[in-house]
Length: 405
Ligand SMILES: NC(=O)c1ccc[n+]([C@@H]2O[C@H](COP(=O)([O-])OP(=O)(O)OC[C@H]3O[C@@H](n4cnc5c(N)ncnc54)[C@H](O)[C@@H]3O)[C@@H](O)[C@H]2O)c1
Ligand SMILES: [Zn+2]
Image 1: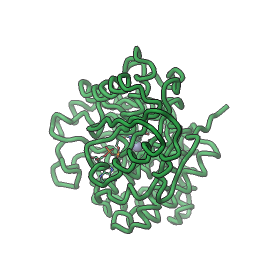
Image 2: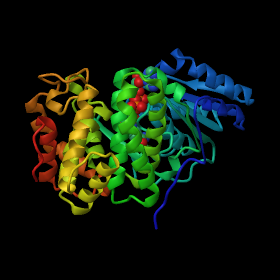
Image 3: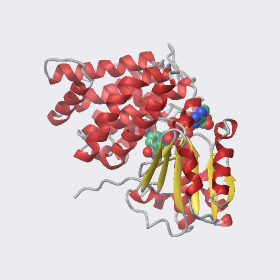
Image 4: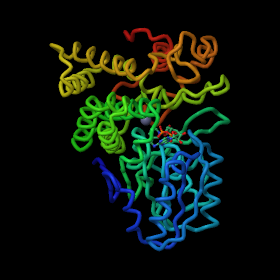
């Protein structure tokens, strides 16, 4: 038996934010990040709509990008004090993910972060509050997914919380919110979305239900991502839908080791002055993982189907896989994303000498590889890497060398 779980409602299209006016409840907390939602007026609008619905509204603000365990605990304490029956998270993946984890802690105050990280091990939520997610970036699709990514900065590791319990009750996918994204964010979140769709399509947990969403998302992203990056707002609006479809695909169809590696490399070099941004990490690792997974016959065929849907050409599956890899690398060039960690600058742009020194990478490699194998996304990857293979793969992602194993 498999399960395909989505929010009860997805309000989409321009003006969808106004759906907040129809919510029923007494108290709502709005969880928001560092300022973009306030600056562009979306926070005020959300607050006004909820007040129009007759609710008392409080705002928990300042949730940082790649949110920490500490922020989750602070937000949960804020909720315990205010006792909302609606949690409305508005912004990118970071504030929405943080709010999901706060929700767990608010419902079950005795829960520890370690408890939350037990995959599909959460108790029943919705005893105190319902959850609405309003996404302002076009990538994570956390507004429809069963996941939340929280960073433990003591360990330098991102932990996924995974359980259908944290699939939001309501998702609001209003493209107006995505129109204010700066280009770099469009690039990174767009490549995150493409990775979600491709990983979900070859995942061992895939189904006909998730395939349909994944393939259509891939076709839309191929058509619209570069134009969205060039500030074409019709394409930008389409990308907001496409990333949500990709989210529907991977929330039930799960992901693979591109994400395992991105989770375990994202914050581990923070002491050298930067993060490897989630979407950029995916963009760099995806071509390497396609080459690695394509050694599995079933995965190779499925990459071939993707290439066919994209009209990339190729006379056989090997040629189709090569065409797909070239397509992804070409996207990275057009979006100003490097091909490997060695060339990843502290500002995320390609540079001769990136911020991660070679000797530091090599020293930390065995531990990163071991952590990546243990990541919750590894189980559904079509090929299970050994420690040695994972180290080799990560080296290819550092040096941009060919995957021939
Ligand atoms: N839950 C999931 O399923 C899932 C999937 C993939 C990634 N993630 C996680 O999500 C996080 C990344 O989320 P993200 O990529 O959405 O970015 P983000 O939420 O970290 O936001 C990045 C920056 O963009 C700004 N911003 C957001 N929306 C904007 C807009 N419309 N206009 C202008 N500025 C805007 C924010 O203020 C912030 O400074 C990471 O922690 C990643 O690990 C979660
Ligand atoms: Zn992702």
